[in-house]
Length: 257
Length: 257
Image (tube, rainbow over all chains, first blue to last red; front, side, top):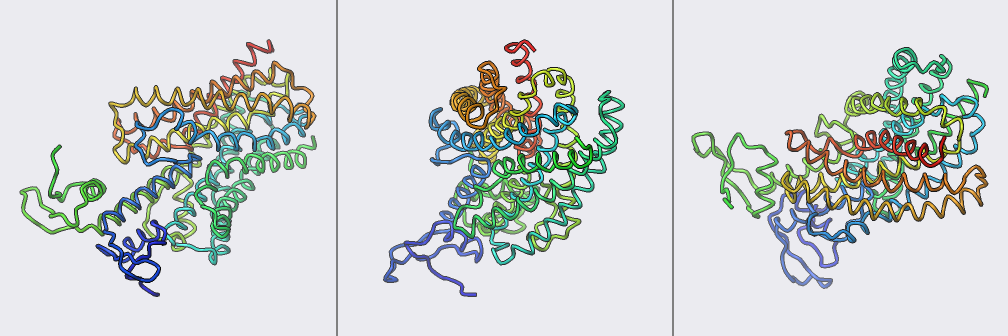
C-alpha cells in the first residue's frame, strides 16, 4: 500500500491524524494543491485531533451534537440544551410507531394484560443487544478494521452471535419467569405458553437487533454519512417497534388471542 | 502544578499516555522504584495506548466487555458472545423491577389500556436523556475536565438542562398526541387529561434522567469503579423503572383510576 509522506491543505484533519497513528510519524510536511510546502504538523497536533474526534464520536453515539470544544463546565445551559434537544425530539416523535403498534394490538392486550408486564424488558434487551453490535462496528469502521466489502462477513458473524446470546437469555428468562415472576412474585396469570412467547421473542428479537445494529452503521458509511450517528439511541428506537411486532405476532400465533 | 518529567514502571499506562497528551512530550524516561532508568516510552506508544483506551471506553459504554485487542473480524463467535452476554443477562434480570411495577398497576392499566401505548416512548425518552448526560460526564471525567468536587455544579447544571429539555419535549408531545395520535391516527381513547399525564411524565422523568445520568458515573469514579460501566444501558434500565413509577403516580393522581 502507498505510504503517504505528506498531507495536503485540503485533507481531512482526522485522516491526517490517523497517518501519525498508523505509521508513527513525529511530523509531516503540509503541501498545497501545487505540492508547495506550506508548513508542518507534529505528532502532538495529531494526538489532540484524535482525542477530539474520539470525544465527538462518544457524544454522537449517545445522541449529543457537539458544537464546541469547550470543557463541560464552560458550556452554557442553552448551548447544552441545543446539543441534546434535536435528537431527543426526533427519537420521541419516531416512537409514534410503537404507540401505533400497541394501539393496534389493544384488544389483545386487554384480553391478556400480563403481556404488558414484559414489554420494557423485551424492548430494553433488544436495544442493549443492538447497541452492543452498533458500538463495536462503529469503532471498527473508525479504526478501519472493517469496510463495506466485509458487510456479509459481519452480518453472518452477528447472526451467529445473536443466536448464541438469544438462546442463553431465553433459557435464563424461561426459568426466571416461571420460578421468580410466577411463583415467587405471584404473577399468577403467567402460563407456560406465555413464558414461551416471551422467551421466543427474546431469541428472534436479539438476532434482528444484532443484524440491524451492524448493518445500519456500515450502510451509513457507504452513503457518506457518519456511522456514529446510527448508534444505540437510534437502533433502540427501531428495535422497540420491531420487538413489539415480533412479540404480538408470536402471542397471536401461540396464545390464539 | 507539578509537571512530571518521567514515568514509573508501576504507573498506569493510561495515566502515562495522558502526560504525553497534556504536555506534548515526544518521549519520557521510565524509572523503577529506586528511580533507576530502565527504558523510555515514546509518543507513538502513548498514541496507541490512548486509542486502545478510547476503544475500551466505547465498548464499556455499550455494555461490551473487551477481553482482547484483536480486530473485530479476528475475534471468534464464542469470544464475542462472552464479551456481550454477561451485561445482557444482568440488565435483563434487572428489568424484573419493571415487570413488578407493571404487574402492580395491572388493574389501572386494564381500566385505561390507552396508557400502555405510550410506555415505550416514555421509557425510550428517559433512557435517551439519561444516556446523553452519562456519556458527556463519562468523557469529561476521562479527560479530567471535571472531578468529584464539581458534583453539585454538575447536578445543578443537569437539572436546568433537564427542565429545558423536558419542557420542550412535553410541549411538542402535548400537541403531537392530540393532533397526530388522537385525531390523525384515531386513538380515540386519548383525553386531554391522558395527554397531560404523558406530557407531565416527560418533564419529571427527564429531570430525573439527567440527574441520575450525571450522578452515577461521578459516584462510580469516587468509589474507584470505572465510570464508563455506569453508562447508557445501565441508566436506561434504572430509568425504565423510575419512569413507570412517575407515569403511574401521575395517572393515579390526575385520572383517578
